[in-house]
Image 1 (cartoon, helix red, strand yellow):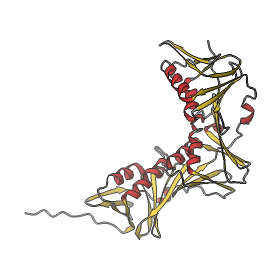
Image 2 (image 1 turned 135 degrees about the vertical axis):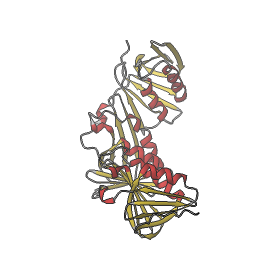
Image 3 (image 1 turned 120 degrees about the vertical axis):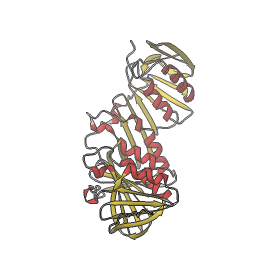
Length: 379
């Protein structure tokens, strides 16, 4: 006796398209990073998919930052749907064949097929998905992707995580005299990176740390230009086929030039690798729970480093070139290392003005990068 299995009746198809699984997976992986993990609006935990005119548009948005992209697809029936970002992404990554077909019906059920694998997942109406910000362009600059990547990477670590002063949870982008300057500050250190650009603009705005982090991840071709489109309250980065839309942080950023010490009591030129390794050795005894400074003594032609905590004591020394007064100063080892690891030159210059004034770390032969680190008191 054969059992008759009654198959469910599929409702009216509202959207149908086919595309390459690899392209879709790349798009989903990048767009997914702008999706809210937990949101009061369920649709924000999903990816918005629109299929129109032989094109597929995917968007993620958490009300702070949005990432959108488009890709080629064979669109049989135009339409749109919101699907769970995590579930959809996991499914697409594990599909067995390169061609994937996706359909949705009038019940918001989404059907995903590839080879012998088939899924049905519940979707959400696009009516519940907030519109991504639209803004009027007031300015635009174009910069080489590799240069922008380096500029962000060499400054983003100094952005503050203290939300009580929101303006410093982003970096200042200043365009003046054909120079783009990015400045990050958190009260304990400041990183400044400059680069010549082909722009007659005069502008400044503050971009959140998360936005910069997402732009960094999207820059995979360092030879490709990146467009930065600026509005009154929003900005958009065009990186390849991806668009990162973000609010700007409102407020008054500190006059960073006024915080840089003008004098030079002591000037030190030291091998970057040698001092980096020495500070790392001292840092073995320090931790977040034991915020003891690494003490640096600059005297004669030698830098002596000492670190003393409840775990023990360490010391080391480096022979180098020192001009000016002897000085003893203490630093948070992690803050000092951030500067050393981002200089990217064989030698660096340290400029000191006593044991209580911030120390300047910069390349020997250029002003493109400057790092300011506030000293810790030595007990």
